[in-house]
Image (cartoon, rainbow over all chains, first blue to last red; front, side, top):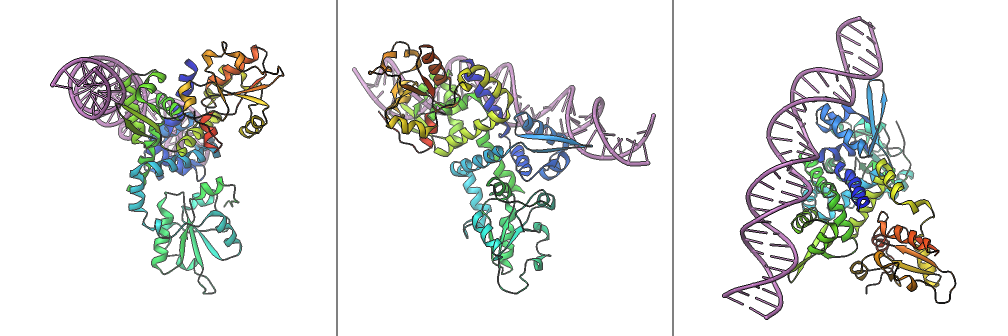
Length: 221
Length: 221
DNA sequence: ACACTATTCAAGTGATTAGTTGATTACTAG
DNA sequence: CTAGTAATCAACTAATCACTTGAATAGTGT
C-alpha cells in the first residue's frame, strides 16, 4: 500500500502548487513568456522574497524552470502540458464553483454581449485583411510572443492611440482584442471602451497562451 | 485589481482540493463510480469523520456531488471535466516531477516490458473474440461500470480462478487487464502474475475512468 | 577591491490544514 | 417511542503555509 500513498503524495505536490491564488497569478504571467523574479514580483504585487519563494515551490512541483543570465534569474513554464493543466483547472472552476460564475457575470459584463471570435476564424479573417488584431497586454508580454500581425496597444494607452486602429480607407473594420487568457479583464475592458467610441470590436476566445497551445503561428518581437 | 485576486482565489479552491494525497485517492475511487462515505473511508484507510470532512472540501470545490438515500450519503464525481483534470494533473506530475518517474520505474516494473494496449485496439480485438478482457477491480467498482464483456476477477482471487481465463479451445489467447487508472498497481500486478503462469497478458492503457471519458461503450451489471 | 543589484536564505509570526475524539443530527426498523 | 446506524459537527492538537524582515550569496561594473 506504500506505493499508492507515495504516488498520490507526489500528485498532491502538483496540486499544492495550484492551491494558492498568488501562485496561479504568477503562472498566468509566466504563460505569456519568461520573466525575471523582479518583473514578476512587480506585476503580481508581492515582495521579491515572497515571489522568489513561490517560484521555488512551483519549481519543486516541476511546473516552471529557471535560467540564470547575469544577475537575473528568468523563470518560465516548463511545458505546454502545464498551460493545459491551468486551462483545465479554469474550466472545472468555471463549471462547478458557483462563486466563479457569479464573479464572471458581475465583472465581465461584455461577456454575454457577443460571442468571442474563435481562433481559426480570426486567423482566416486576419489573413484576408478583414479585421485588425489588437494585443492589449504590456509590451514585454507582446515582445515575448503574439498573434501574427497584431497591433500592441496596452490598455492604458488605448484612448490616446485610437487613430492607429482606424482604417485608412474609412470603411468599418472590426477589431478583435485579446490578452492573457479567458479571465483576464484587459480585452474585456478594451472591447467595452472601443464600443463606447462607436467602433466594432470583439474579443478573441481565450488569450495568447491558449493560442500558442493550439499550435497556431506566433510572431516574436 | 480586486477581480483578479478574487478569481484566482476561486481557482485556488480547486487547486486546494487537489493538494492532499488522501483527497486525490478519494477522487480516484469516486472516478470508478459513486460510493458511500463508509465505503470510501474503508477503502482509503481513513476514519469516517476524516473522510466526511475531505468529501465536504471536495464538494465545496465543486468536484463531487452527493445524494442522500436512506441513511447513506452517496458521493460521486461531478462531471467528466473533473476526471479530465485529474488525468492532466497526472500527466504533468509524471512528466515534470522526477520523484514520480522514480516511483513508477521502481514499483511498476512491468511498465516498460511491453506497450499497453490502446483502447481502440482492445475494442476491435475483443469484438473479434481474439482477446479476453480482465477487470481486476473490486466487484463494487465493476458493478458500477466496466468495459463490455470484461471478466471480473479481483486481484486477490486471481490465482484461484485462473481456469476462468483459460481458453476452452486450448489455443493461446491474450488477456488484457485493466483497473482504476494509469498508476493503479492492480493491473500491473495481474499481468505479472499471469505471465508467471505462462499466459500471454498485457495491460490496457489507463483504466476504467479514462475508458469512459473517451466515450467508449460501457456495461453496467 | 569596491559599491551595487538581483535573488535567495533563514528565522519568526499569525493563519490555515489534517487528523483525532466525542457529541449530535437524521434516518430506519422494531 | 426506542435502539441502532450513517454521516456530520464541534473542539482540539500538531503540522504546515503565507508572508515579513533582515542577512547572505552571486554576479556586474568601476
